[in-house]
Image 1 (tube, rainbow, N blue to C red):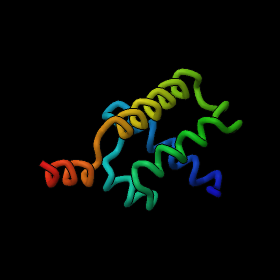
Image 2 (image 1 turned 90 degrees about the vertical axis):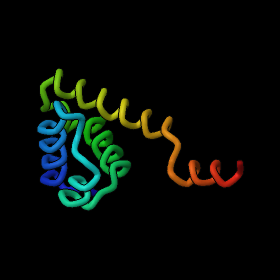
Image 3 (image 1 turned 45 degrees about the vertical axis):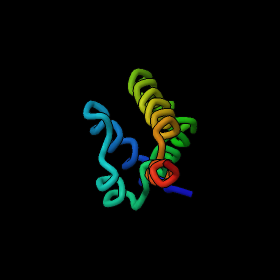
Image 4 (image 1 turned 60 degrees about the vertical axis):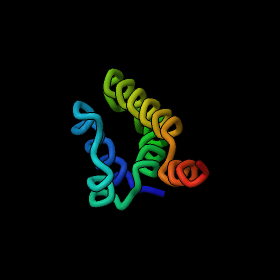
Length: 90
């Protein structure tokens, strides 16, 4: 369970980096000790919580769109082990 302060930091980070497509995996690890998947999960949980109602509706919608786009992109992209497996099969 995250604290409200940690949630505020995650929202602030997401807001700052949104115009640039989000922070890098290294930034997420240093700032929050999270993988990109963990960060997206937590950001989505925050946006689904009552605390998100205090955010400007446009920011909330933009962050939801960001989470949805990144989540679907990570599902669509083959991971490295899949690529190695395919290369070894041929």
